[in-house]
Image (cartoon, rainbow, N blue to C red; front, side, top):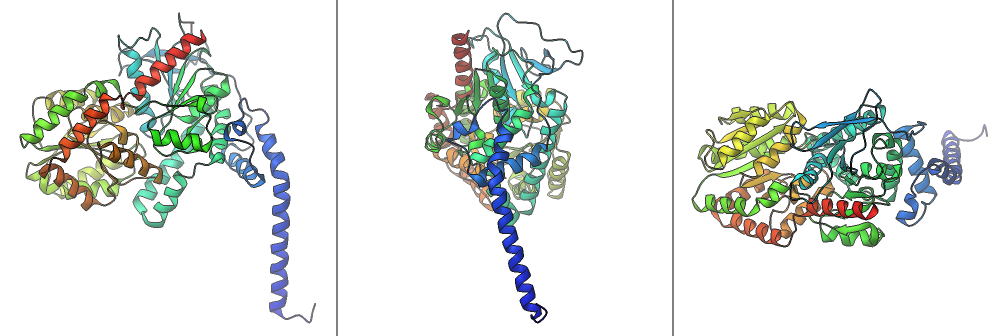
Length: 518
C-alpha cells in the first residue's frame, strides 16, 4: 500500500466511498417499506388504495423522509377544538367559526349546517369559499340549513400555526421565482406541477396532523372544501359527505381526495383524473367556481361592456395582486407601459394592491414616476360606493388604487370590481375561470398555464401573455377591434350551458347528499 502513487490511493478511497454509499442506499431501500408502513399505520383512510397501490421502495422512502421534514416525530391528535360561531360582519346571513376558548361545545342545530371549509393560503381558496357560500345564503337556494364559513387558520392552535409556516415558505418561493425569473422560475414552475402520488400521500399525512381543526364540527354536516387539506382532514375525521372543489386545470394527485366527491371545473381535468386512476364514483364535472352575483349579472355586465366599447368610452382594466404578493416586476412594468393610453383617456386602471404594503408602494412608485394621477380607496364602504358609481358614471381620475389593512376586503375587491370592469388582467389562477374578458398575464407556477389555455379555448380570455409588450398589444386590440365583444358573446354562450355554475352545483350536491344520508 505504501508503494502506491497518491492518485491510486485517491482512486481507491473514492471507489470505497462510492461502494459504501451504494451499500448504505441499498440498506435504506430495504428499510423504507417498514418506515412507510409505520408512518401510515394509524391513518383513517388508505391513500394507497385510492392511487392504485403502495409505493415502491424509493417512493416509500421519499414519502417518509418528506413527511419527517414536515412534522418530525410529532404525534397527531384527533380531539377537536371547541368551536363557536358569530354572524359575519362582511356577508349577511353567513356564520363564521372560531375557537371557543371557554371550552363550551356548539349547541345542536335543527339540521347540521352546511360547512364551507377553507384555508387562508393565498387568495384563491378563500375566494372560492366565499363563492360557494353565496349559493347557500340566498332565499331561493333551497338551503334550509345555516351556512358556516370554517377557515382552519381562524382556529387559534398549534395546528393552525403549522399551516401558516408552510404557507409562508410557499409564498416566499412564489415571490422569489417571479422576481428572479430565468432558471429559478423554471425550477419553481416544475415544482408546482409535479404532483405525483407521493404528493397526495404527503398532503394526506399532513392532514392527519390537523384533524383537530375540523373535529369540533357535527359529523353529519356536509363539508364543501376549497382546499384539499381541508377535505383530507374531513375524511380522516370521519365525515361522510365531503365535497372537494378541485382547483386549476392541471390534474395532479394532491388536489384530489380519497373518500370525497371531487368536483372539477372542466372536461380536460375530468378526463385526466380518470386516466390517472381516480375512481369514477369519486369524480364529477361541475363547472367554474364563481360567486352567485357575478353569474346572475352576466347578461347585464356583458351588455354594459359592449355598449361602452361601441360608444368609445375608456377601457376599464382591473389589475389584482395575488395572495402571495408575487408578480411585482411584471405588473409594475405593465402599468408603466399603459401610462400613455391612460393619459390619453383611452384606458382606466383599477389597481388592487390588496393587503400587500409592498405592492401598494410599487404601484404608487410606478404611477408617480409615470406622471399618472390616482385616487385611493381603503375600505369596504369605499369600494362598494365606487362600484355603484361606476354603474352609471366615470371615475374622477383614470387610475384608482385599492389598498387595505384587512384580508377580506382585499379578496372581495376584485370580485366587486368585475361587475363594472371591462377586462380583468391577472395571472392564470382561480380568476382565469371568471366570466369577464381576461388578459392572462405571466404565470407564477407552471400549473397555471393550463388555466390560461382553458380561458382561451372557451373564448373568455387570452392565452398566457408572458411579456409586457404582448399584453399591451392585446389592450390595443381591444381598443381597435371587436375582440372584447367576441369575448362577451362567448361568456354569454358559456353561461347558457351552465359553465359558470360550479359552486351552484356543489351546494346542490352537498344538500342532496345530506338529505339522503339523514
